[in-house]
Image 1 (cartoon, rainbow, N blue to C red):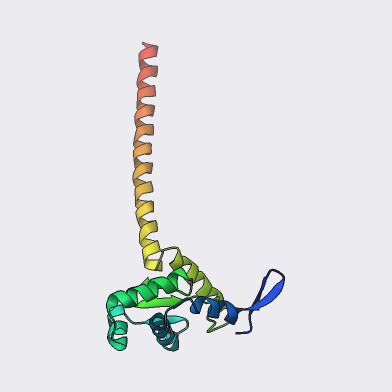
Image 2 (cartoon, helix red, strand yellow):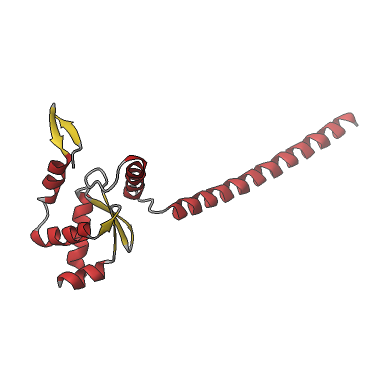
Length: 157
């Protein structure tokens, strides 16, 4: 990792930032996260907590705690029950536009929006709600126009 950032005017290697976060893990947590890192593809680890607990001979609560702690340290985030995305700003597996896409995916996942399908479903629901509101407003406008016409007729009489 040659990437650097500035901290208080001094260049800091991204590896140093990652290691400072990694040192906050217990030995068991570090073993789990290291295994996951060793088995990633494009920063994504595919597997579930039961598989990890079986592999390390620990409870699922221990694995869950390790994953939550790593997430709180901004090392990884959960995409779904079987996928975990390592922070591409700390763990660089690709460069250029692919890296930018991973960074964007990580930021979206961190915000709790884990999939494009979920975002599309949410957008479709909002569109449907907006369409219903527009129909209701359209009906009200038609009724208002009808009332105006009736008032005009009554005024002419």
